[in-house]
Length: 162
Image (cartoon, rainbow, N blue to C red; front, side, top):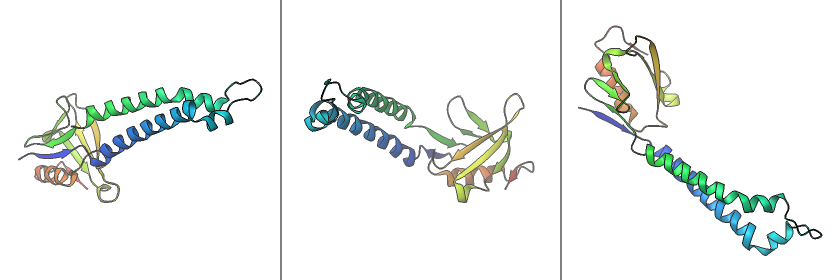
């Protein structure tokens, strides 16, 4: 039976919050820079009639803020369905990134209860030993994934389960 760890609500909420802040700031700066007469008068030189740096910033920044909101929203859109699936014979991060249980050398879960992450040490296809850090800030339901990994590897004597 496969155990799924979906993309975390923590990250999803962070993306949504950043987009909201950028959009609100863009609207606020546009309003200050183009519509609020008191702000415009305060930041315009009386003699030359030229806007100061604050007014220029309030007029030029909103398109960049909106572009940033679109970029962050795009990142969220592409990552929102990201998940880890611990299947019967392998752990799947994506179609191209899979780690078979046979290649896992160690699982360091010493910081899982305090910091919320564990590290898998494994050999790739070329034989090089690599590590993969999996954090609860990126994925929910990691307790179940870790339990399944440990139970699958329990019979293997070369596995280090700290």
